[in-house]
Image (cartoon, each protein chain N blue to C red):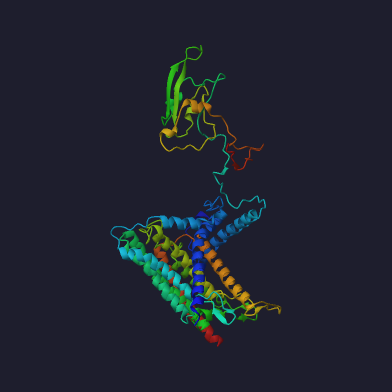
Length: 195
Length: 359
């Protein structure tokens, strides 16, 4: 319907509601028959491409994530395994949710590094996942590319993450989407291996 | 008179038939709406890891409703508050007594009439029962001592009584055609054929009557698109204070009424238990061939045909419920009084004129 048709008076036939009702029923019935057909074929064991529903059955099947999605933080490491973080407080300062708590300490043995964090805590209950900490970091010490989305806890204390936890996290998991040469997504919802 | 044993067996059959339909409709409602909207719908309830496309959900719902506390507000009328849901279910169920679900079953010397109560005032009885159905709703709403519930009860009373009149008037046309109000006789009448091949189902003689009756019938069930009494998004409605099985009974009533409307529609307009070309001794096709079968097979096919027709109309009612947006209260009233009632009256005049012309 065009915008200028909006206030056109209804014709007598339209006023009976019947054409509207029938058009609506035709639409929903078409969907019902098509989806029911797909479901029936699948129940009979046939591999049908058109799924019959757009639902992804979440705990069993997981939708692949886009690489730019900001997920659980992790702290990167130097070659010797110590954190890259130099406790410059940039992330703590820029954080709009004020959920990063760094306590710095001196690093006497290394000549070119003055400070390292004694503790580096993030309260994920406050975090708004804006990614400013990642952008602000001059040392590439914090990233949000773990692919971990399911962050939940029975209490507020459970939302705290300390330095050791975040250092141990791995980068990209296999949860990410894959693209073909033309930039189209090729991966489909998948079943996660539960170790 | 039939033996008391046969009557009890028929009673059990009808009750099981209706209640299992009512129970399974809760599943159909969720599943059909899901499929219509490209979703999957209820499929999580499982017994020993077995899910059976969500068929355990009605069971889980029933267990939940039985185990929940049936809370009663401190100021509620204790007696009426407890009684009202039962009244509601009762009048929804007793209507099925006169619905014929088959012709006759001959077992040796006994002839079983496949209708619970062979009442010669069938349709009038149905109207009476449908008229009483509003009591369960209004009493429950009033006894709750809750303003929103009372508002829902008032709306229900106004809507159901308005549409009660239209319900009666829409069927007059059919009664004029059939010349009887006995439902079993009405179904037998529809066993004839026009030009030897077209089943003389009521919908062919009364297309307008069918359309109006289905509309009014859906309005009588108080479900979307005619749900101002419930008004989920505004006042919660007449069962606002009910929980546990009290609510469950109101919930079940809506579904039983849906089955009821489907059954009446089939009986009056779609030949009831009539299967096309099925005579008491087997199939007689209009092109001359015959397929004879035993009497009990015929009875079984009739019951099966009736069930399938009911299932189609249940599907249609669900499709309508999940397609159309709800009417506003004034729109419900306007549709009932200013459109459906006059058109039904015109239908009576037209039918009368047609009968006069043909005779």
